[in-house]
Length: 180
Image 1 (cartoon, helix red, strand yellow):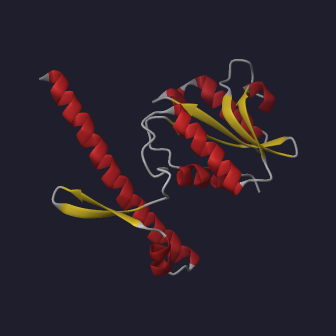
Image 2: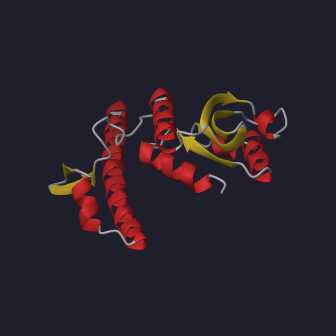
Image 3: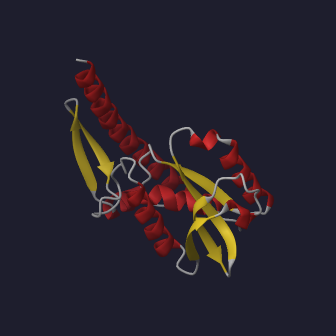
């Protein structure tokens, strides 16, 4: 029964996570619309909704698009890489997106963790991204790499593989750390 119990717990967590993500996305969209002075009803009409039946209740979740970018990445690095590349191409077309950058390129020592992606403008690094496993963000090698970025005015962040890592989330993170 241990295996079956673990399987049921995992599936229940996925379902609860999906519902919570949908509710948080909806609340954040409403709050962001209020701050920006946008009409939330116009936003609601522009983005289609997905209705889910959870526990006898119907829960509405905004759908990002038809390509499945609103789904959990399920720890698949290829999906996350594809979403990073799509977000960079759509939001920062004038930037160069590089892969597998050693931390020494941003001034970190040799023991620092390298970056999976970097957005460059005119050959200068602007935003660096790491794909990490659960709790790996605590490692000193990761912290050294981020400290080197911070000291040089380069934005950096982690994407943890156990999280959904939606394309819109990735784009928002890039915007948030992009130096002005």
